Every structure is written in structure tokens, then in C-alpha cells.
Image (cartoon, rainbow, N blue to C red; front, side):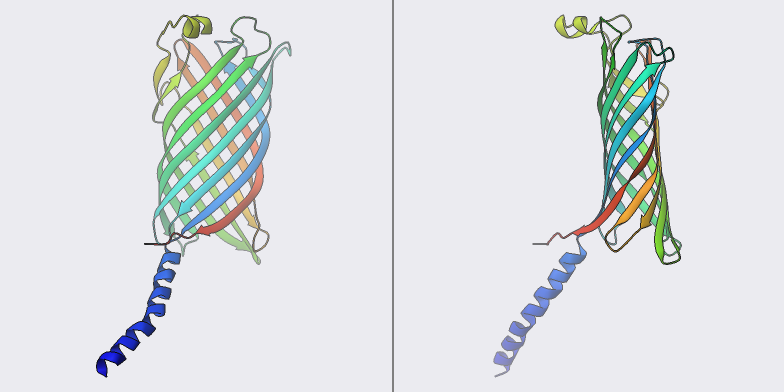
Length: 272
């Protein structure tokens, strides 16, 4: 009789155990914050392979940022997709350059929660992979320049949450600096015909450091919660890319006012 009662109790406990295990699985889900933004602003371009002139004009940017973190974990995974396009004129308005690029950023941060979770500090690193081009409308020979690089970038961010009345708000500052990397560049006086048709390699894959490619990227963003499901994000994105390799100088400085929205959701991962 005692054995039967024990068996019945064990069977009745199975749903409770399954529910508890499912609850643990839910708690193990990753919280994802995704932001989608567009921006406009000024771009300054210099590439001495194409021209000694400085070019400046309007540009546009699309930025998608995704961050994932497990509840209770201090580690956070971040990904960003950034696409730029700009049309710049020289100072005499006699020539133009079209600049475009795509950057993929992937990184990991370690976070600290302070002031009752209102203040968050994050430090870590990112890998930046870039592909792009610059096209000069006035050049007959070698009118275009390819842009390719991969950088390892120490990164840091700080955010602060607060309220104004019943409205929840937050501000965040984020910065990245390249430490080391590699980039593609033709050498001074080398044509793309020599490089690709004749296969004349001339130090075209160049290691870079903060000294030879002192780039800098920063974001200052503000979040305003407008309801249970919608958060407005706006702010400034500054991306300053420059390099001096193979006796050539180049830079692309972009300043963007950004605006978009933020979505937060939870991805549930069930344990076997």
C-alpha cells in the first residue's frame, strides 16, 4: 500500500516538475534589444589615389543594432550593420565623388549594473569588417577606389536610465577605436589593371595599427518610451575613418543625425 501511495505521489509530481523545468528554460532565454535607425548629415572625403582635392556633401546611413544577453549574465553579445552612401563635391564644384560602404560589427561586452540598475557600464571589443568604394566622376583612368578592411576594436559604452514624469527615458554613449587590422590598398602609382589583369602584387594587403589608420567611431543616443511596445531612439553617429598607407592618404568623415525605434523581446531556449 505504501508503495502504491509513493508511486501515485511521484506521478502527480511529474507535471509540477515539468512546469518547473519549463520555467527554468524560460528564465534561460536571451533578452534581445534591436534598434533600426536612418540618418542624414555631412560627409567629407579625401583619397589621394583618385584626387588631391577634398570633397564634401550630404550622406545617408542605415544602422541596425542588435544586443543579446541572458538574464543574470554579465556578458552581452552585440552586432551592428551600418550602410552609408554619400555624394560629395570638390571646393570648386567641378568634380564629384560617390562614396558607399557597408560595415559589419560583432563584439562582446562585460557589463556592470550600478545605482539600482539605472547606470550600466560596458567594456569589451568588436571586430569590424568593411567593404566599400569611392568613385570619382572626373577621372578617366582609375576612376574608382575599392575599400576593404578588417579591424579589431576595443569598445566601451555607458547608459543611464531615468524618468521625466511618467515617461521612461535613457541616454547612451558608445565608442570604438581600432587597435590592429588589415586593409587593401593599391600602391602609389599602381593601376588596378596592373593589380588584377597582370597580377603585379605590390604590398596591397597592408597591416594597420592605430598609428597608420587612426579611426574613431562614436554614438550618443537617447531613448524615449512612448508606450508599452514602442520606444523612439534618436541621436548622433560620428564615424571617422582614415588611413595613411602605401604613400597614399584617405579619409571618410561622416556626421549623422539618427532617428529610429527600439524593440525588445525574449528568445526562449529550452534545455534538453
